[in-house]
Image (tube, rainbow over all chains, first blue to last red; front, side, top):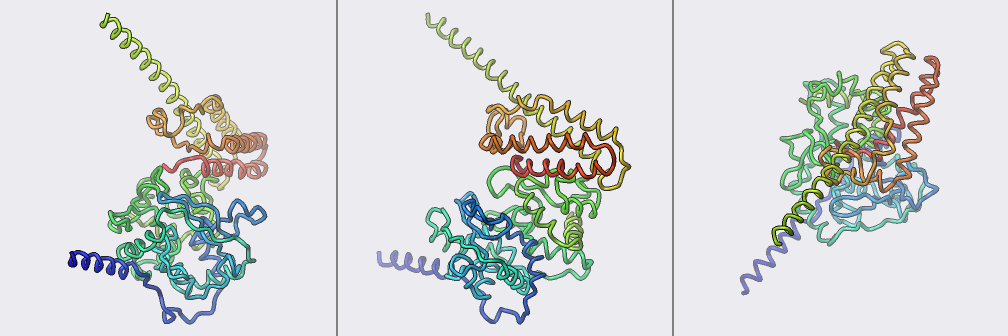
Length: 295
Length: 155
């Protein structure tokens, strides 16, 4: 009896320790002068507005202001993404740089809780911290909006958050992105944009039994994260005749279905395409060069 | 007596089954008509986009013919959206519809998207030269995009 209790206690302790967040520390913050222009670019590349849309209740707030609060429906429940404007009470105005880096790159809130990986920190973890700090500088330049934080409607949320901590051992790869010297500069820029801020793999790569991205099947498509329909494969887009060449794919990413590129509006891709269209032409071409190379 | 009841039930069953499958066939035909309409619209884009991109010369006759083909394929539009054609119905699954449930839950929004399309299509049809065509086209392209974003399922 005592032995059983001891085993149970050890099990709980192990769960507690293994599910405890492992944050970045002050030593991980690079010396960096924020560049707001780069921040705008990365903000669009990271697709922040896709989820952090203003709540429908905020009628006088423009839809391109990341005031948060609009419901995000997922198979585990409804989330209300955070207000990213610099309002000190309801937004992120009072956050430190380290708190911002930890939320974006490690999925840890300033309160030290694990964030639900609907926030794609699993991809953002590969970003350059300088780029993340530039996004923060851009967000800090926005006019503050009052948009109170709303707790996610998920059953047993505190337990789920601990579970996410455990899951991070298999689901969160914190390896920084590295270039491939054999490839062109544009290809490498595309690889970075796609795999780190762009978080394309979060939907276009299927997950294994642990709900971690299955890198052996990278970009091969999979079930839609909202539960209905499929996300298409990004491999062999040129070979399969989906696009004539990388330039055609770049035009598709720039213009979407407005120019007759079928399939680029549905399933959430419309918002993604709109974000990509805000990038400089060289970045769009870089994304296309990289995606077109996926066989 | 028993056999008569059984026969009656059997007959009723056969009739019901026949009725159901014919209703299902109608629903499936509606979905296939929608798909043919969308295919014609896709064909229309294939005529117009190369002109917009400057890959092909402006051709009023080709543009008008593409619109006419679309209008022909889409003529029965208003009758194709019965509740038995929703994505989770037998017909919806059989015909692999990409229509989203929002078409029925946000009927006003769907109607508005259709109106935006028809208005833009009329403007393109009314365009008389390359400049007026290029000015009218973006609204048409955006109407495709806007409607698909809200009302079309991912693959």
